[in-house]
Length: 278
Image 1 (cartoon, rainbow, N blue to C red):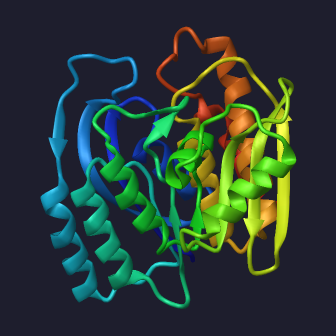
Image 2 (image 1 turned 90 degrees about the horizontal axis):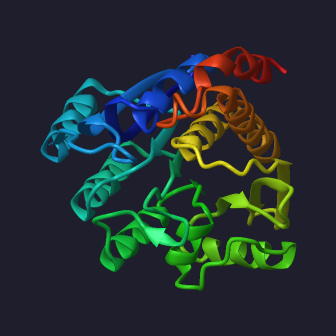
Image 3 (image 1 turned 120 degrees about the vertical axis):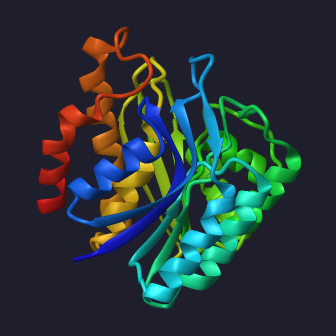
C-alpha cells in the first residue's frame, strides 16, 4: 500500500487544504498521513471572525517522532504554508524524509488573480522559490508562476508563452513543473506540464466555467499527487486532476449559492475511484 504525507492547514469548516487533501488522496487508495500547520474554525475566503491556532512549533516534534519510528513515505506533498518559518521547517522535513525512492510535490499556494494572499510578502515568495528547488513537481497557478519568476501577470496566454513559463520554472531547480489555470481562450481551461528530462510538454483542457470556487486548486494538487503516487504518467496524472476538478465544479453549480465556500467534491468521489482504476 502506498503512503503519502501532506503538510498544510486544516479548516474545521470549509473545503480546502487538508479537508480536501485527506479524503481525496485516501479515496485513491493511498494511506495518507497529515501534519496540520494551523487549525482554523473556517477558511479565510469569505468568512469573518474565524479562529486561528498556529501549529508551527509542533511540526518539528512530529517530524522527530516520525523519524524515531522510522516512517517512510512514497510522496511528500505540501500545500498552503502560512509563514517563512513554516517554509523553512518544511524544507528541513524534505531533507529528513526525502529519498531517492520517493518524490516531493510543492503547491506554492500563495496568490491568485494577480495578487498575493493577505499577509504574504516578496520575502515569502523568495522563500517559496527556495522550497520549490527541492521538489520533483511544483504546481503553481498562473499568478504564482508569475511571482516566482518575477514576470508580469496575464490571465490568458498562448502555447508559446506557457511553454516559456514552464521552461523558466525548471530554473528554480524543479525538473517537472505543472501549471494550472491555463487558458488560451474563453472556452477552455486546464493545465500544462513540462518534463524537462525528456524535454516534453503536455496540455489538457476542459470547458471553462465562469464562476470562482474555493478549493479547486487543492483538489487538483491532491489528485495529481495521488495519481503520481500510484505510478500514473505525467500526462495521465494531469488529465485525471483536470477531469476530476472539472467534475467537481460542474457538480457544485446547482448548489453554488448554498455551498459558496467550496466545491462539492464528495459528490464525485465515485468518478475519482473510476479514474484510478482505468
